[in-house]
Length: 344
Image (cartoon, rainbow, N blue to C red):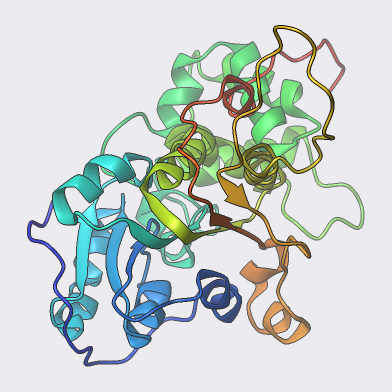
């Protein structure tokens, strides 16, 4: 980790990257000069640069060491108002303890893989290039190839079905387990060609047959749903009263976690009722979630940036109530359910 605390300085240099829903995210954060903001998925620095341009101080975090290396030019232009940290945004509490004693004015997470990672063939996120079946956002942990080699057939099928909504999950998992006896799956093209063979795309489908499986493996490799939940719970503890939390998701499971988190923390959908004797009083809301969500990209952005087509932004405003911490019901949303027997 880069050490040192934030000091307000003037920003020089220009934002060089426009991420999904940039204007909408910055509006949701309601950036204030001198406020400290946590960019949990720094990427190419688009959100951070926009916050800096409005006078905010930023702690930018990314688990990808290449993103950290590329981001040094943004650090150089920020003149002390940006600290860049290699780490996971789920570790927000530990990271903030090192870099600032101030409560956060805002936090933003852009969930999922970046376009830069997709373009780096050697990372194995995409089947557009033949490369090692890796998919790790960081430089440690199990790869996608490891999962396909080590997990049993049911677990592989559960990963593909739950994280990728792949209808042919059992058929693909069976092929993986049979084939790996003599030839384990170690490359992106090798896996994509097998999926195309055993579960070809239906007539009229615009996406490649392997798209859902690659998404599912990436989510599993990086524990993306667990990391998301740890991040929003950590942000709840770190935000000042009136602080803003903004989350951009690209997958229905991600959006469901964020939607349920804000609903449970804001008391939305909970009808007031007279308590029964001995019934505990519900804790006060820790967030207020404005109406009109989720926010999606406009027509022009969807046309110019295909990644924005599935993006959903949700945000909420922190109250002064104490943080609630872990939530078992929300944690279950991040876990693999057991699949019921099905054909496929």
